[in-house]
Image (cartoon, rainbow, N blue to C red; front, side, top):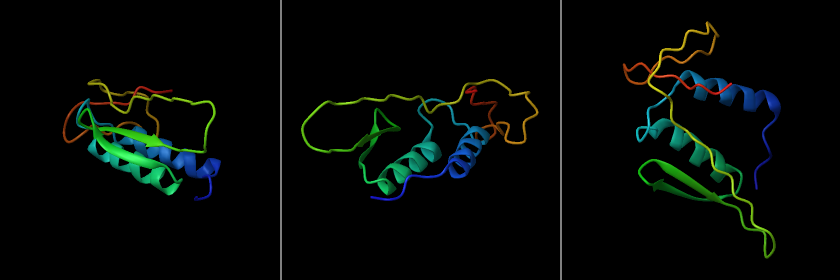
Length: 100
């Protein structure tokens, strides 16, 4: 199992994903990054779920099960925050990740 990323690495990942939004069912880049990161952490990964969905399963024996669901898609809006990692749009579309 790979080392857990540090806060700087996670912040860099956050800024990259925020700057490169993809609209619903077109999150190919994002899904690839998520799948790669989960594999690197030792998860069993299934891609293409519902189109572009990613499922990561980490088994550790019997016991409680934890489920985490997260959205990966951007919204068709123009970001006007002025942040250095502001959404750049997806393939010529107006799109933004509206996460905080």
